Image (cartoon, rainbow, N blue to C red; front, top):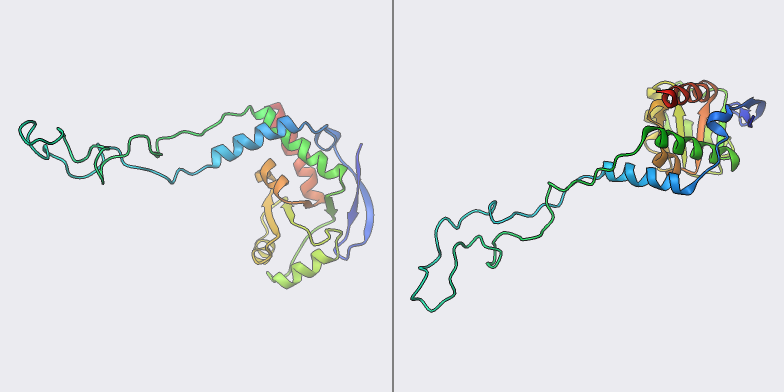
Length: 214
């Protein structure tokens, strides 16, 4: 089983913790991780660009001029794509669908691969507990400097919501917090280090083992 050091809030090693090999000792397969990342990003994509077709453009309720006898080309409506201000023929619309389905077992497998990679590269920092008496950014920054995070981007994963920690991390650009249930591959890859507690690491093992069985 994989073992990681457990730190106190002073940055001192107090013991070692054995991790569940079913979660934290999985061989990473880049292709699987890539498929999951592409699917998650596609499903998070917001459709903002939208052009109006000829049926959506205002005006053009009648022919701009009679069919014959004017010497000009015939036209049925000023909403035609041929006219300035008319509808767009093949423009982007909000009806586009970028959704990609991904098997739940594959998604959970990719998550475990990324977690295992954090352990292998010593980018999983485990602490006994993380608590702040008040939501002060300065206090959190001082706490993080004592840990072997090398002032790199860090995702703090908690076993339960902590309002003080959440508010304190808002003003730190390289720090983010989220609960165990919200863990995903994209966030784990976005942040170089994963900082979590003993309670949270046990909850991760239990939660994602159960999800695999479902």
